[in-house]
Image (cartoon, rainbow, N blue to C red; front, side, top):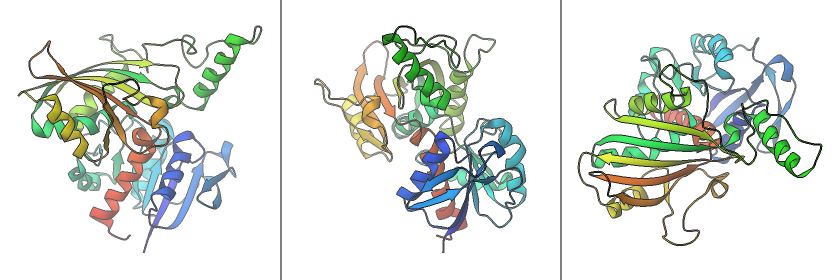
Length: 340
């Protein structure tokens, strides 16, 4: 016996990836519905060897459906997620709307699976920000070995994290650099993204941080340990898919780099590729379409007590969004609903 599953926002990058991953991982499904706004009504979506037509999110009745995977942004989520939850359908939401609500669990299954039972508070589960998700997968098994005191992270985030328009802008600006008269003005980002890096993701806050940086701080504390100090600098780079992070960790106790490597090799969801030679590390282009969070460049930081550096790379549309959502659905089914 399988589940009745809804994918809301099925025509977007993350929604389409959800459908791909549900099929790839053979999630037990008896019935599936794909929803979109009225502007995209009737658009066809692929699900394995099937073609599904989108239904209207505004009029859809969630009664009798088991889970709804939401990838529709905060505004639409605010309107429709409570309706789905009230109808008895558990919402797993990709937006930032519910991440910081103390009554709603924020889950990365490799890190805090025990939090799944808190879904009963509001029948809603939150999925973390893409940059946080891949980082905490690497941090949690190390935190279990020796408590992490502080994390300094710099991110190198691909344009797919912004959406289709950003992907098109990077592509068109890149072409325009080589074809005189076809230059493309920056619209999605405040400056050109082609052949450039932009140290600005989301809005600026009063303390000078951007909201993306604040998210990494708040979400890491909620998922792993509220006592961890985190400081982040988030940068948009001219890469289509795949986020990279340079992560500096300070532990309470000394942890040797070889032990870090061994711990991460055994950690769920982590793949270590760490050879000290040309190409002996993972880059964004290597991780596209993959499930794992990759860790490379593991080394001691001699400038602080008990310090280690990591290079962490993942497909942001997968682990940072769609994959983590499906993993939460699998965890919910396995630990709570127990149909499949």
